[in-house]
Image 1 (tube, rainbow, N blue to C red):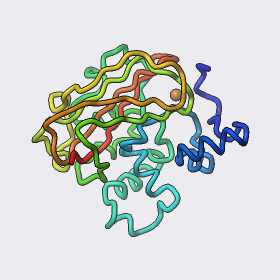
Image 2: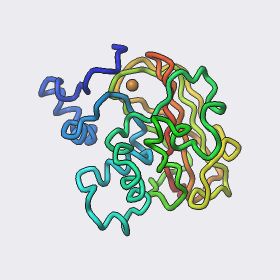
Image 3: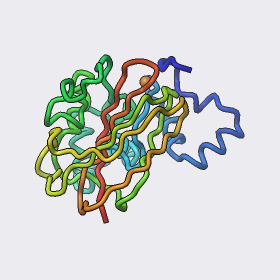
Length: 225
Ligand SMILES: [Cu+2]
């Protein structure tokens, strides 16, 4: 299926399939109750900034404790809650393969201020919640709409770059993985091998969807142990 407009498929799955999927993928339980307006996807592990904020606070987004416990998510919810409700919609259309031309330095995590600035809060430098990873780790991208992938490109911020102090530019990124095509499905796993990274880095995943010229730009904060 190539059309990405219809509602998410989760509520329509046969019960047995749903039970299996829910067991394997807890996030579907959330999307079933807070279904986004349209179906796309994001990196759910290590969680992208917007998916992570949705995952941690989606059912508790008015809790004032967020300001102390998760200040970067707090500023993001205040800036535009739809960055989290539409955690799956951080993409640009008609990029023509020109990622660096379409997404200026300092705006990588918002996909170049895409969607009228809905995701601009994700460019804010700071102590975003990190996911612990080893040198070799696997990215899980969840594709609600079965777009497929022409390719994924995965970058990691260079050692020494400080995501708490600065929004990255392209020269701060090191390419660590470039894949071939993935056939349409819901769960894509991308194996990444790195060495020499310690501490807080941003993993930057570019997903070129196959159904049309639609490209997703996803920042995941990680802590290399
Ligand atoms: Cu889509």
